[in-house]
Amino acid sequence: MHALAIGHAGPDAAAAVNGLWNAGYHSIMRVEESNDAGAAIASFHPELVFVLPDVAQSDSMATLRAIAKEADAPVIVACAGTERALECLGPSAAIDGADLSSPRPTIRIPLAA
Image 1 (tube, rainbow, N blue to C red):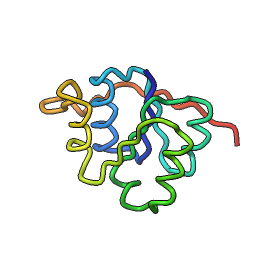
Image 2: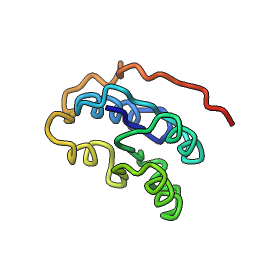
Image 3: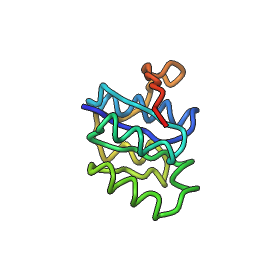
């Protein structure tokens, strides 16, 4: 299953990638900004979109709605924090005790403009 994470690199991104991996999403793409989400969605066709707190708190609701409409997939907006948002994917996505210093590998694919 494919998942798209939108947000900047750091502990929240590492937690999101690990949580998504544990929940069964073994194909995960991450983009830094919501402006890059459209191209990623068009080429990657994710079954789930996970919006990290940095993007959730800085982007407008209209932007987030546009991402949801374009993805035609469930969108999790992590306003309350990555760990809390991952709980909705079930206990397998839990990151308690996970080693976040070495997150699952993510593959960066340059997208055509």
